[in-house]
Image 1 (cartoon, rainbow, N blue to C red):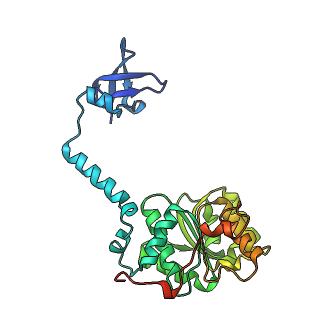
Image 2 (image 1 turned 120 degrees about the vertical axis):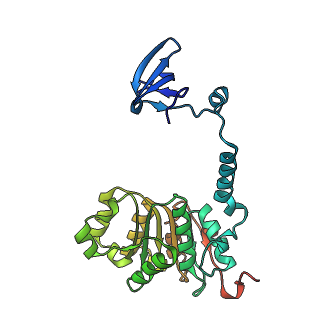
Image 3 (image 1 turned 90 degrees about the vertical axis):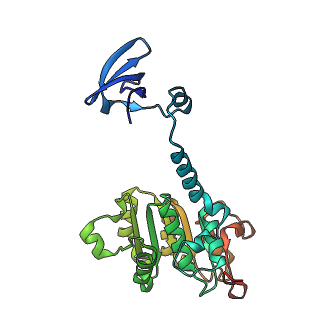
Length: 289
């Protein structure tokens, strides 16, 4: 906020010090030799430089420093104590899910291949909610089997307070291209999205997606139309999670094609291991050990 003694920049990039404020105008000393009046809304306050503030004795209240430190501690606490997730959610979660969430946040393109029943949906929703709360992701797309579309939407809305909407032909007919929005959380079916006219909507929007989740990603089989959908989504997504309980069907080429959606420079299975998270039921414990 512009005030007396603020260092400001004018629209023509000249810098000066505010000497006086009257109504919506400020008298500014430019280059230490000439003062002129400027509309305040045409001035940019650039006085946040710490040295300049110290010289002006512009010192914050002690309570503001304490609040800033507390805010930073809360913002970064997950890095030092990942189990903070367990105490900040009403969902029952397990240690392996906490570890998965913290890894995915740091490694944004992952193949999550836990055995059936180990909560891949919960892990994924925790990641989405956490990244959304931090402002890191604002555009989210969940691509799931048709039979699970409304189940996913309800989970995201009811348990994680994400404003999830189902994208289908009816929605598009009423609302137009949904992918042009600056913020969204969409759930749609893989077979709806793979259609050429729907893919065209994604391309026409020319809009990157912050987080894309593909459930039952083993259906992205090499050289089919679902795989072509995967390639299109991979090219425009920052975070991308592929979920499947059966990551490898015995065909190495098919598996490598799938992980190349996450990292196109992968050449062999050994080199792709850092992209894979897989837990089995016999290895999982609860928070009490």
